[in-house]
Every structure is written in C-alpha cells, then in structure tokens.
Amino acid sequence: MVEDKFNSELQQVESSITTSKTIVGAIPFMSPELIQTPKEANKSSDIWAIGAILYYLMTGKYPFGNGLNAVIGISTAKLPVKPSLFEKTQFKGLCNQLWEIIGMCLQKEPKSRPTANELVREFSKVCYSLSERQTGQIKSFIGHNNKNRGFISCQDGNEVFFHIDSFYSYKEPSIGMKVNFAQFDGEPKPRAFPLLPIK
Image (spheres, rainbow, N blue to C red):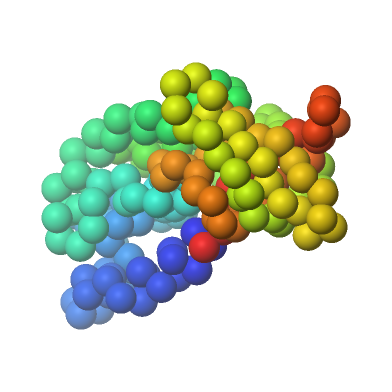
C-alpha cells in the first residue's frame, strides 16, 4: 500500500529530522517559511504539508525531491509538472480537482494558501464512487495496439472485465498482479473501475 511505503520512507530519510532544535519535520513536506524562518511558521505550514502529502499519495514521488536537494525546490515553490497519469480519461476529472487543491496548498506565500476550513470545503467538492471495493488477481491482459484490456479473477470465482484506462498506476497490468477495484454492471461480464494495484 502507498501508505506503508510513505511511513517506511519517512523513517528512513536521513534528513527527515534536523538537529537544530528549531526545525523538526520531514524535509519533503516542509513549507518554504518553515525552512527559511521557522519561528514565523504557523498553521499555513500544515496546509502546505497537506498539499505535499497529497501529491506524494497520488504519484508516489515527493513534489520537490527528497533530503537536502528538496530545499531548493521548496524555496522556489515552483509547482511540479502535472503527472501524465493524471491525464488518463477515466481519472481526469477527479485528478484535476485534486491537482487544483495541491496547487492551492503549495503556494509560496502562506497568506495565499487556503485556511483549514476552506480546504475542508474544497475537499467536500471532490466526488467519486463510493461503491464497495474488492480484491482480485489479474487473470489475463492484452496490452497491444488498442486492445489494452483483460480480466480479473475475483475471490468468489467470478471474472470481471477491465480496460487499462481504468488502471491507476505507472506500471502496466501483469498476469498475477493483485488489484483492488469496484465492480459495475457490464456485458457480457461486469466491469472493474477504478483499478488499483496492491503491493
């Protein structure tokens, strides 16, 4: 799971916690002011961190790099290029909404970031399927030309169809891969959407 990788990497980053006793935190998620003028940092630094963490959870990468190399990127606060994964047709609407929130949180000037209440309102506008999730294993996948589709074996023995456009990952689906998905009606087989790989 992404959360497990997130927690594991936080513990392993050598520069996660400074020894100055004036700055404490994980560098990849620190705001510019927390690095430059830590005594002046306030709640808006937490808003920055939420944006950085959201970026990490959606991409598996830190928005400005890791360790001391991240300090330069954070100081300039130039928003990373939108990942190509965000452009997948089936995820585009949701990803664009979340990308806007990331951009709002990662503003260089603290006063330009939303407040906690404003951020809650922004997240409340994000809507996605609340359908029950289940796990399965990819049984087959044809990834050539425009086919890019396959079937998932469910725990109950049934099969579910999926298309690569519904697969949220930089990796290509592979036979035997464990996946998490919601199931919807379809002909001749039910359809999986969205489809997430499980580590």
